Image (cartoon, rainbow, N blue to C red; front, top):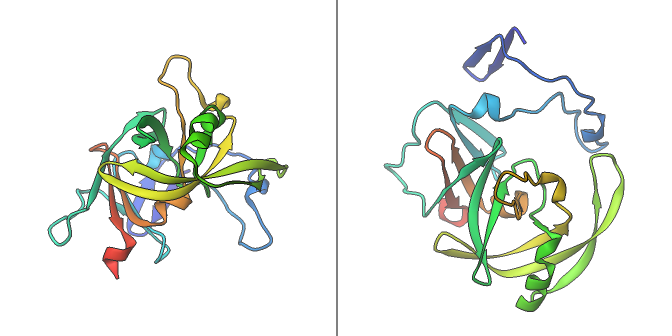
Length: 203
């Protein structure tokens, strides 16, 4: 791509893959022309405000003078994916932060532990990228611990074996919109931190 602009920021000679993205189109939304990935974001801080439907890209540290984030989560990169550590029932899990995922997802291997915790369970229909609809189990986790905070949230149980790298620590799941939309989120790639401001504090 010879020229790419996002707001006032511009890039020259940017590489991009060309793929068929027809599966991302829907009758309810405008067509999606492409996806912004780690190669573009890695030198910046990405701020997501779901309530205002805004993305901000900063090439400097987030100004914290007015309002310190209640939560700071250090992350490591698994390939291009930021991975944070959380706890469920005193068990530590490694979850990727996936801004493109609508739901929180856990590997099916955690089903037994979650059933012992005692949260409600049910089934939902999930449409994959190939448009195939699958019936999957959903579970309510009463206390997801992230840093020193706790949250009640829902997870879908899926087979995530295709995401596992034999040479790396196992990935237990993904945190998606169901978790992230409760916050204003800053992903500081250079510093390896995720900053969270609960939405209630912004009202």
